[in-house]
Image (cartoon, rainbow, N blue to C red; front, side, top):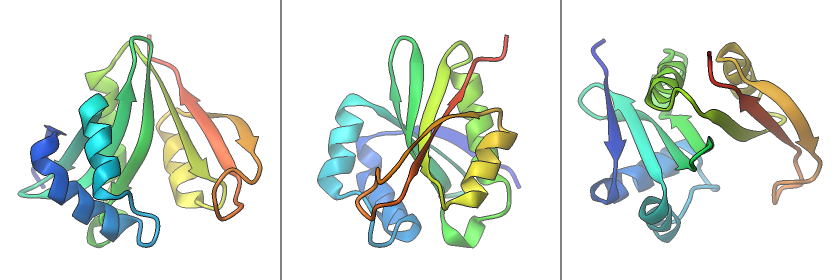
Length: 142
């Protein structure tokens, strides 16, 4: 499968909103949230003819925070999220990466650990549903 990696922008608003609805039903970001994110931050996608996996990230001079990373359901368990992470690491080779993930999302935690992230801390009752957040970090590879 030949995959393309691309930066997504405001021209991809509707596409990102559709991806959000598919990946996070009931918890998807609104169009306004996505638009605001793209005004100040960046998004990336990977896929063949269409985006199948995407990430919404915040870049600062020192670090990258991954706000969202998800693969649409029909393409899960094919390694797309890991490939997208690897592309992000190459895009920002000298930066620390941070993310938070629900403690109950064991497949995502396993993915992040396999990609070089380590757990920093847990934040109890962090999410609106009362679940715990796991804060993770990946240092640049020297």
